[in-house]
Amino acid sequence: MEKMRLKIQVISLAILNLGLFQWQTICFPVLNCHSCPIALFSCPIGILGQFAGLGLVPLSVVAVLAITGLTIGRFMCGWICPFGFFQDLLHKVPYVRFNIPEWTRFIKYGIFLILVIAVPIILSPGFPLYFCRLCPVATIQSAVPWALINGTTDALTLSVRLVILFVIVVAAMGHQRFFCKVICPLGAVLSLANRFALVFPERNTECTGCGVCSRVCPMETGNGAASFGVYDEAPEECILCLECRKKCPTDSIRLWG
Image (cartoon, rainbow, N blue to C red; front, side, top):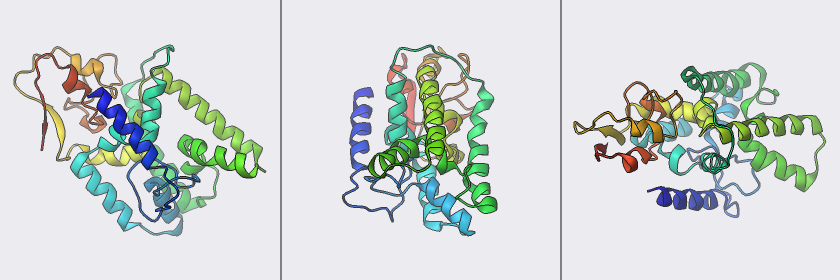
């Protein structure tokens, strides 16, 4: 399962950045900056922010996110998203591991409401605190490439973005999928529908409560507490990576639809 997911993540990374075709009028539900010179699709967070600044609601984007969330939940986060893949690779680097409080998962909802929606509406998307101007994905895919291609006249802004990227990279090395759990506004949107998704891993009556699924779940944020993934307390965090199903000693985890 892990090898198959790795292959799909690599293939997705390549497909999402076939900018030769420039289908950026189409929104795809992953965090992949459409300001990137080779990006294929538009980023839903970027579109939502830009439309918020215009006082409009992009119904097609809302529909894409709603359909995705209500059918496969955060599957895109675990299998398709390039930055999620990047974090998976970062966590393989030997580094000091650390836990984060469970309440930090609520931060991403505030980031979505404030930096993606409120700031563009009140201050415009050109304001420095608009999410896309700070997004580490945009820094990697847009700010750095365009600075290399055209040079930069705003070294301070680029420096701030690089510092933010560095902090997130270090955090992802120490805590698996840190950005997905704490910061990602797209993860926040999709997680709202995750409880109602048609496809979701659940435990059957054969479960012995050994806790293996909790320990292998990449979205686990507590100190061993079973509060994410297949458990009922916060299933919105599940990214359908199926590591729990793979490692379950009693084969008691199934995908229900």
